[in-house]
Image 1 (tube, chains in turn orange, yellow):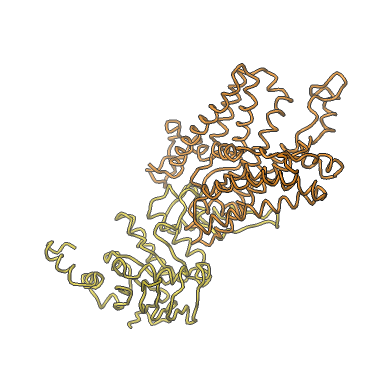
Image 2 (image 1 turned 180 degrees about the vertical axis):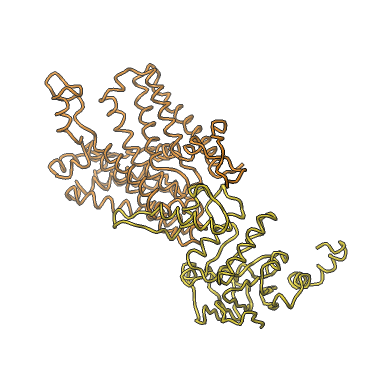
Length: 373
Length: 264
């Protein structure tokens, strides 16, 4: 680090007390550095220990499917954390949005398009309520959303029993939507034609009958990638992004400079809830049913992925692309361990250690960035 | 009231009153500041300086009194209104966000954008150029406008905050104890910049409890005590120790000063 910094002759008028910023320091200023380093570490580890099928195309898709579902939540959680708030209710929101979505489709017989729009609006509304409570009571968002973690989970159970007449699983969603033109956007695999073409030309593995072993890219992966890119662009290149950093960095200074801090935070809460609703829609459509345990503990996993991705717990610093890599690390380890000789229950041990390491690393980076000594 | 510059005041408040429930924070404060002058607002803790600044910058609304900006009566409902009227406030430690870059801090809340709607984005090249240029004007040579504000010294941060207000067209600058946390060299850097701002024709309201700093740059002094104006004096009419005594609002300090051998 410091020893690697360039100590070449400074420009004539430069302050002699300031060291030249070397390439290494420059890279260290990127919040996602920790996540990238972590991912490299994880890949090297599995390269040495795991069965080589893990690195085949089908192995990658097995990892990316759960990573992408977590990642959609993690990206939204990262934006919210940069904006200075937490949302512990996203896991429960997945279950609750799944219930709303299922009920609108089956009990109310609405088409898929209507169900998606209404579920999203409803989620945005719930998120905005979270935000308004946090803003107006000035309570920590940690406590307010912890309350909603239980409220929403409980409402999901009660609602499921009401909608099904006593069961905690709502079935029959698959049949309701199987002819919808929108289905392909939220369920199944994309680019199937391309994969068939690739198989025909012997570019990817195929079954003896000539069909490709991997039929396409799961749509959740596409959502994940698109959201990561969009969120990164918004954060780094738009006015809204500047406002998110400002709102999380110091709400008073931001407000004094004319940033509408309350609107930014409320919007971020709504966005996080919508991300949960998107995950609910994707997973419910894939399963054809919804149940009360959907999204269980996803709030913690999403926040951990965001922290691994470089978000500070105190807000004002972090990156969406970091959360993207954080989620992939998560998926790699949770699935990857089954390709090794290790007991896959090591996963949780790994998770905790990774979180601790990431927080220590982030604190170190923050001191580096602000020049704090 | 002496008006050294014989100009119409930009800000003029008359008998401003502010009550917080049963607490009377301001009980009839009057002051004015004109273009191209530095008015120093002096007062001990609890004199009402903070409340007066908050009133001028639109954070709180006065309970009574007249507030005129360039001759027109105003009623600010938010800091935004005050900013739009050309009144910019630089708070001692709330001006900058340490984790954000200098450029992002400089343009915070007023980011220039380009492009059409769904792809409208920040004009970062322009922002960086403006920031570097404005910093150069005030004699701070930054190598990289993308470095975090946390890496700047306290004096530099104050100067960046002032430069930002000037760049965005402030007519009056309210500086809330800009020098109180700074060392000697940093303080003179800020005081020098205040002088420069005055020469550019802005009105400056400079709040401090340090009489020495006040005397170095101010044209006039308004002294507050217990929510009231004790008086306004031109620099020529008052000596530094007289000012000190007025500000302390009593004889205790004189006594103490005598006991300690005249060192306060």
